[in-house]
Amino acid sequence: MKHVVNIAENREPDTDPRSLRARVENRDKPVLRDTYYLIDRLNGPSQRLTCGHTTIYPTGTTTGHSHDDMEEIYYVISGEGIMVVGDDEYPIKQGDALYVPPGQFHTTRQTGILPLTVLWMTCKVD
Image (cartoon, rainbow, N blue to C red; front, top):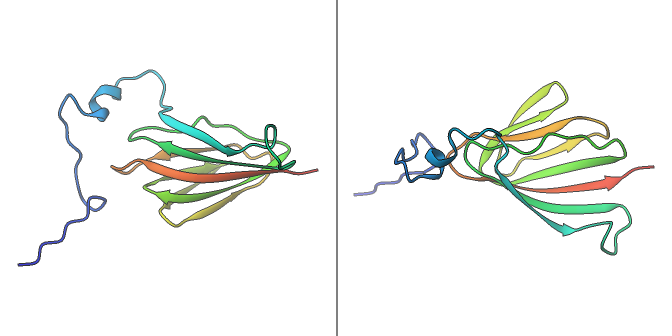
């Protein structure tokens, strides 16, 4: 008998008090992420580009911000969430790419049951 199940489709997470969700449920700030700089224009060979990798954990967000002198792209490696750019919200999932113009406020919220991992790159504009 064949039985196929996909964790990202119609699966409820564990509600055990030892789970990550239970431990962070009543935190005072929604930010729950790790960011790693891969290429940093301030400490590397590039004069305009910075590239990084961010993982947003279940129920978490990134710190919302804007860059007046930089444009940015995001590529979703895994997971799903909501990307907020200015007044607009976009559902995002693995394989999506998103452009953020200079000066636009943006933040990302994780909405699935698996961590949301994105690769991002900023480019300084004149």
